[in-house]
Length: 237
Length: 237
Image (cartoon, rainbow over all chains, first blue to last red; front, side, top):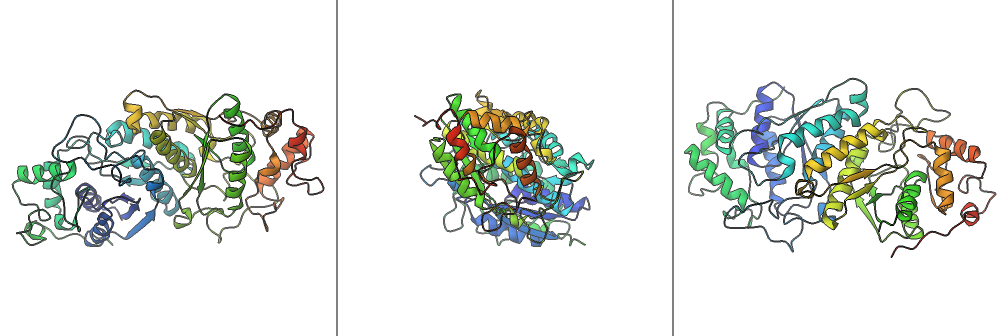
């Protein structure tokens, strides 16, 4: 069970899980996010990377609000990372996403949950840290019938200690087409703003790796990088 | 922040939280439950017990299924409690409900979450046990900006060690109108089936307390018991 947002990180996690031989069921949450364009990106990535299933669940977090991503009255910060947890933090988001993944995993008999959280090149969101992931794993095994009956849920967060550049290198090695991903919190007509934290972290990482970002660099045709990668996305069996 | 299902337990929890002086915001989840009649019951209870707010969030767990309460192809067990966790178990339900309550609590500045789980007269659901509640509290304080910044979320589960009869006595003392609550998993035209686990646990408890159940005993007018209770529901201020 792979939580797939349509961004760079979760796409890489999906490719890593596929490489390990997992039969991947992907879950995307349509939560009323400002950057809803990522849902369509997730669909394309699931297909391109050979997931056996891609499920989109709806949960409108605009009814809760409290984040620049779920309340249009709150602006997405632009122009550089600031200290502290930014306004793009969505209260309880990863707790909710993992809970949805857990419920669906239990129903289909999956025991391995993958999430692309990262606590190195990130915005300081508390629910991206390894201690959060560990606490959720403990909870998952207490909360469920499967857990009580002896199955063991594992929460895999393979990117948690990687730099963004390392993540991109890993994905390129696995043939991820980053031209299909989207990271921007505040896209205009589907194009990245280039100024939000997520755009800035992404572009710095591509620069560090030394390859153009197929999304941001519009002079390059999409998919260029993937075509240079050593292998094509695996088809799941 | 009180999770209010419309059932007997959460109604009692709301009355207990009100008695302690909390300004109660109630949250009900419309999750595609078979017994959707409980959502309307929750609305009436929130008003009757003086909550300052009642919010209904939609999250369709029929997209996940796997439970007699969210999949019409799975029957609600009738005729007596069996060993093991029954088919009415909903995968990850209380994890999801608490996560929604946590997110909304963080947005409105609430730090005390109330849930009416009970691990004595219950169906053996793993997410009704004290160890689940404790694990969620740990998670809540790792998952959130408020938790990281020093606020402390507390998950209150005041019924967890009470018998159902003790819960009813407590509610009657606080003036809960159990005629407004609904417990049945499989109501017919809004009326309780009298045969599901939830109906059986409820009717045994009312019998133990020695008062008629205003919902099941149709010969008694609704609200009879509440009118005999020592105090009227408090209005919140």
